[in-house]
Image (cartoon, rainbow, N blue to C red; front, side, top):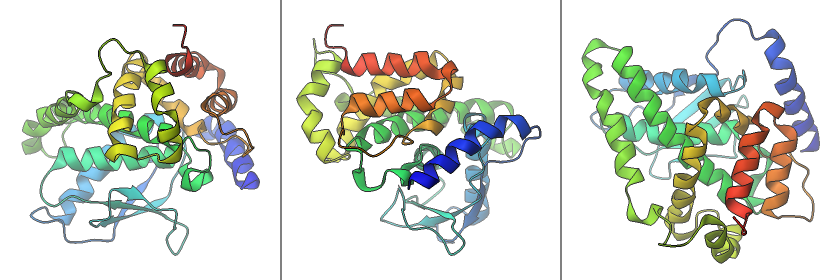
Length: 275
């Protein structure tokens, strides 16, 4: 595991020097053909569009072929890899629900970008934070898809779908469980739920992740390029210190210094009880 982290960090440092020409950071390989009323070719087109809009935030990385399954166990990125080492993503979409497809797929791509497989099975006790971050990223991706399809849809007739991405995002943002209790700030809320989150990254049916995501999204909205920082998550050494403070300090240490202010702001927002 340590070797893999070292190799990834070396690649992340080297990529900016040679990545002159654009290449898609991932290639979609549909393994399932049953998507309800949606045609597989259309599913492929939507997923490739998602790859296009998130590509500026992948730090120049290449994820290779990604095997896409449609299965009731999804959405999830599996720790198991394909026969040639491919990442495997399970989605759960049946029909021409392009916003739902975008929401699920961008969330799972965020896990790949966040190096989820270097800290498997809640090894850090902070997987809940990665889950929250990826929930926020999926909302951001919906915004980007709305902009992209308004200006440059895959097909001219799909332009009318562009507002649906924003509607889906807003429907999620407005959910009551995503709001902090009245008069409570995030550090106090985190203290209350810390043990629950450390033990189960999906506690309360992901409601806790989604609340945190709503608090994180405005930080990234101020400077969207900062989303590239997620490529440096989960690179720290596995030690006996499983605290959130250590987890975020590792992130800050491995991320380029241009992203330091954002990581520090997130750290303060979650841990600064005096704020």
